[in-house]
Length: 187
Image 1 (cartoon, rainbow, N blue to C red):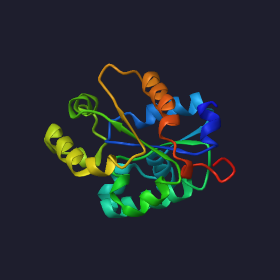
Image 2: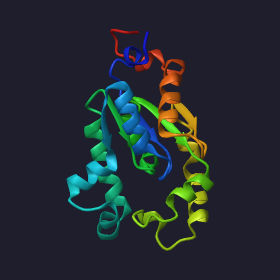
Image 3: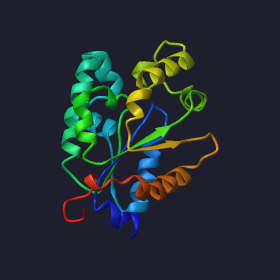
Image 4: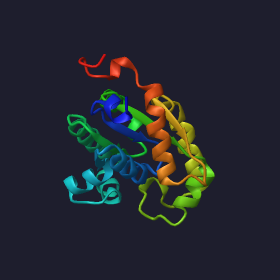
């Protein structure tokens, strides 16, 4: 049975730190699986008519997280999606109930790699006017136990290409797909 058949349209939710590559890997997965791709942050930006930075600045993190949860709730009503989530989506308990509608994949990327990827990025509200490496370490320490609740953990190295990561995810899915994740007609 192919991975596509095994998935039966179940969504893939990519979680991990900002800069982990959730969007690029999510796009690659959508192509390999013939799924549609959704980036939660992009959806929020379109819905709100403002950037994530503007939302944080004008309404605060709590309001952003509320909008993020509402967006995720709408997304999980669909099938055959590869979904790139925001790095902090795992912070709200209610989001886990939405994420568990699909297969949760943690892109686990070392802080040094994240630092290299984000050093010139000025669009991340949580990384403004801080010691970047220290902030990344702190965020990862706070979130690691939550990320570890994913169905599948993919450790990413600096040399991995997007396609290699997507292929590793697809190859690992049959080993982690639990019968309770499958629709009733399959289990």
